[in-house]
Image (cartoon, rainbow, N blue to C red; front, side, top):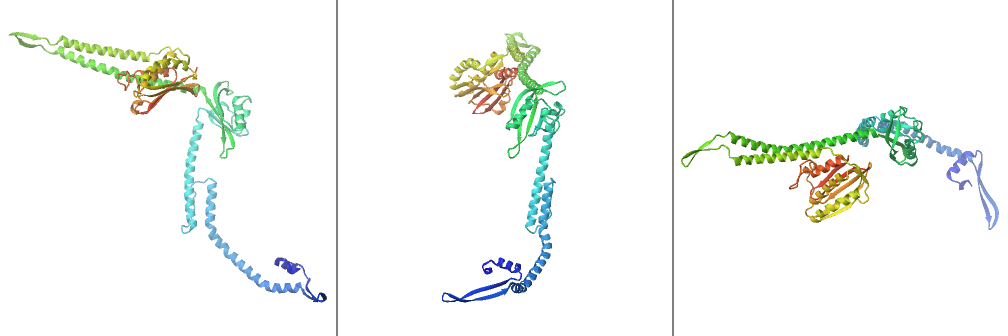
Length: 493
């Protein structure tokens, strides 16, 4: 049975069965009848002794070879693994955030190339981290100096960050403080934060009163935005509280600046128009002065001496006529300027753009037909705007007629009205005409500036002034040879 086992089982049996005899039996047969048997027995002790004598020298040699190998491998491993330890040490330092980590390795093998690559990567990481650190510092500085209040709330509702503007509203807003402890549960900002934490969706902006607890209440435009990590998991909510009073001051300043800029352009245009008639009058007055100061000349006529007058009355009247015409021209320039700049009483009221353009289109259509222009107006569903119907009608009429005149060979004129951000309505007047060159584009709203033959240079200036008086905005985009688009934005009632 022992012979049927594996070699390891046989070896284990020899060393565990102490004093046991092993025997082999073979029956003796005569025909089919067993007449006897042969038995051979041997002690396991004898087999084990013989095996020990054969194995011990080999084991001693193997043990000696192993010891020598270990003694030689330890210093050899230190030499071979030193570059790996150096690189691992450098990686550890990089992981701690150290900048400019370098490893010194011999350049005569593969480890040297690996060291060079490590140094290059380390230098790049250091540069990127320095740049990122600068950007983070700039971002932190910008957030710290924001007029708007900004805060970040953790998923469990505790504050992670609050800039000075937020802390000025809520002095107790310190990192770790629950937002629920800073305001009432029914406050819009609290409800908006909980909604964003629950759904992961941005909310707002909405206007809501905000009491800082010091007796002053102001309107704030509040909104919440989810902050997600690289995997998309929600890690917080960013809250912004925009000061509407400050925005109103900024908008007022911008409107005042635009009006000053418009006045500067008007003044430049008037100065140009006034300069020409003044120069003409100065020239003709100088000619008259020279005529009056010239001396009489004696000439012979039929044997008699005749004195020629120093000044021909017809010539003098011609000079006076020119001067009179220039004075009238100068008066017209001044009157037009006064009409342009004199404040008018706006009759502000809700104006339906659909009704307004129903009055404008019939006036523009004959000009469009004459120039073979396809006229399309899409303002039937436009919202109302706050304005003076008469002034707005004249402004859009000027834009539409100018567009038709810019397409002498035909084209298309499209007028569209749609809602814009901030309770405003955007009106677009787009044509496919000759366009406006870049050098003229920045001057088209200047008073008396025109590129049309026989143009007065007043129409677009009046349009600009009308839009400014309505606290609106007007922009223009143009590509020579492709067309021009005027965009007008007006406030709703």
